[in-house]
Amino acid sequence: MPAKPQSYELDRFVCSRPLLTISLKGGIQALAWIVDERGLGGGQEMDGLSWELPLEILWERYVEAKVREEVCHEGGEISVGRLGQTVFPLHWSTATARSLTHLVPDIVVRRGRSVRIVDAKYKAHFAELDEHAWTRLTDEIRDAHRADIHQILAYASLYDADEVTASLIYPLRRTTWEALRERRRDCAQAELFHGSRRVKLELRGLPFGARLVL
Image (tube, rainbow, N blue to C red; front, side, top):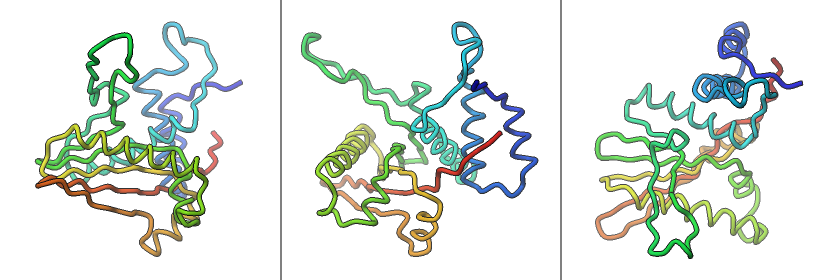
């Protein structure tokens, strides 16, 4: 039966295996964060329940861990949606006809007058865009990718800054990421201008997916 790991067990697992890949270490670090900050599988009504984590949530935590690591080295102030730090309420004119009630970017990093908004997407879009021409993708995939871009650009519109970077982060198999990295194609960027306002749109892939046995 699945059981919730303790954070010290995860730390010990990493320390005892120096040859673990960077991506696997990041995934384990993300698990430890969840254990420490959310108490899954223990405490109050969840006590005694088996512990499991959907992959899309693990991916979001993994990306968060990578961004936090970046901020530790490069400086900045990080805010996280899952902690309620990036919530923008939508105030509708009537309560009878409304849809979303909030916009919540996953991660926001501030450095002076620059802002980076990060949204982690557990989808294969980045790999599909590289392997196939846009015109060969199914309508469903193209529509989903457009929705991702529209969402991150909507988030970008919420922030007043001299420089805004809107990043969509997708998972890649390590072999795919390494091949793209070697060709400098693991990140694609575009710029949007409206008057004096500039927004940099970024599509980025990160290695993810190694199996973990504790």
